[in-house]
Image (cartoon, rainbow, N blue to C red; front, top):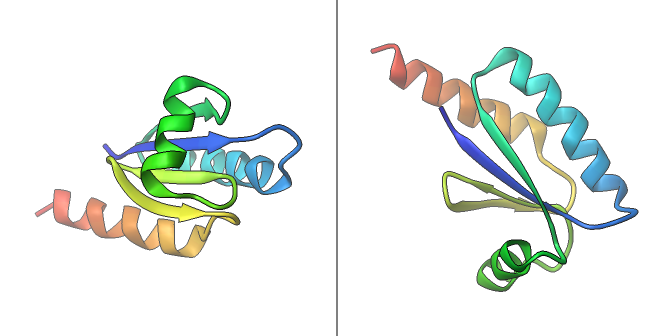
Length: 88
């Protein structure tokens, strides 16, 4: 089950879109999603570590996935590939 961390900021419409998209993907795929405020210590550390210039910063299983508008098709493809590998 993938662990997805989303670092968000206040008044960020891309963050709101990512939250909605992940809720939808969560109905299709098993996943754990954690939302961190960019002002929190953990959120700020991820932003520094991944040098994210915009929000949301999305990290999948500890690896940088995206920043800015969430590429939903790319994430769906990743989740589908992992599901297929898990069924073999």
